[in-house]
Amino acid sequence: LTGAGLTLNGTATLGNASSLQFLSATESLLDGTGEIVFLPSYGQLINVGSQALRIGPNITVRGAYGQIGYVQLGENVINEGTIDADASGPGPLSIGSASTTITNTGTIRARAGNIGFAGAITNSGTCRVDVGRTATASASYTQDSGGALTVEIGGTATTAFGRVLVTGAATLGGTLNIVLAGGFSPSVGQQFVIMTYASHTGSFSTVNGTSIGGGKNFSVNVGTTSVTLTVI
Image 1 (cartoon, one colour):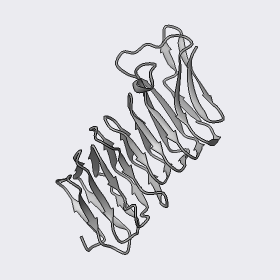
Image 2 (cartoon, rainbow, N blue to C red; image 1 turned 45 degrees about the vertical axis):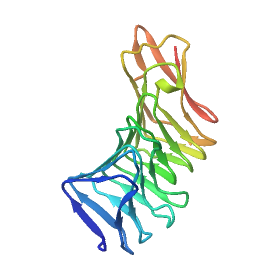
Image 3 (cartoon, rainbow, N blue to C red; image 1 turned 90 degrees about the vertical axis):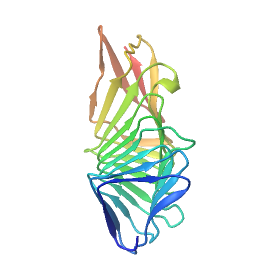
């Protein structure tokens, strides 16, 4: 597409290494009420013009395996809509590249597949990691006062709860939501490392879901290199 935007009100399916490309020297906007669906055979949603790719507030990008943002040209990604890894594939839904920034004011969810943040991510919206899924930030993770992180806990194994894995620094703020899944009832003393990082500043200002029932609660410890939930 040679323009600076596209209004999509239907469904575009990307697979077999196909791509939807914006050829624009300015920020490109994907707007409308439609959806992009990535198949397990891989697809790309990119702006080849090396400027930002903005996903509008009523757009959904979902599926199994794909790249959002052009790796080679260092394209920033701004998500105002929904990015949902709602199917599993041979790789994650990868967003951005090492030299880019990712800004989320919408919703990003690792539901049935994993999410990869290749660039520095600032979460001012919602990031959710379901049972057994990961959101991996290869650079840094920043959550400001308007951001929320939701993790599902469905068991004690690392394959049974959501995790955020940050290679670099984490700056924490906003809200942490803890959601028990699948009828799981943890026991006193059990621990869940829901986030790891090289270093951190700040902490969550609000934590929801700490009361488990039966007189049990989650205690949240924001440590030097990890965030750990302990049942007390």
